[in-house]
Length: 312
Image (tube, rainbow, N blue to C red; front, side):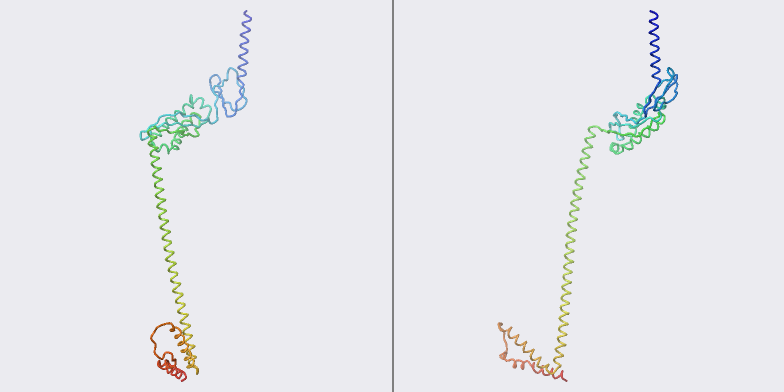
């Protein structure tokens, strides 16, 4: 019976030794760090790869994940600078940079980072009015990252960024803000409509003004063209008349000038008689006698005197 008990004891001891032997062999994956203690004191940090420890002496007490991780910051109640209560939550993105400090510098760096982010968020929102809290999210995030980085240097962590997910005001405040936004939207719509109507009226008046100016300039140009045309016509008639007079004077200066003048006067007389054929006017009794009419008017003597003067 005693031998059987000893056999069980030695079997248990052998099993413990085997288990400890296998536990002393460590395969560390990438982006993971194992903290090894020897007899309760920090010994070394195991990086990625194969490692063998001393059984019963070395012990892996902490396993730190070096990858970046996202930690939710639960919703919390905050008061803005104008005494409005809002609910704020966010997300922290951080990673472990020093596994030893993350293991021995603080008991739970994740919990500590969340609590510090919450207190910093409350303090920053307390300095802002409600309207600015929706506009200054970047300022709040930057301040939280700054505070966490300062504390994280002793915790062996690095905070990459902090994002605010939601800022929720009370229902009454939300309704008032919606009414304000709706009123502002209506105001902008009315302003845009009035600006459009104003611009439309300006465009129409500018069009009418341009039309009137174009018409007046066209009328002015037409008058100028007509005046220039009449002036050119008068000048051409005057030049033609002067040339005709010069030619008549040259003809009258010749020996047959008097006969030519008489012939021309007779032609005018005949044309006048044709024009008066259908008219009712008072004429001299001897109007049908061309020679008598010319004699009465003294045109024949004038023609002969003219011819004599030109010959002299």
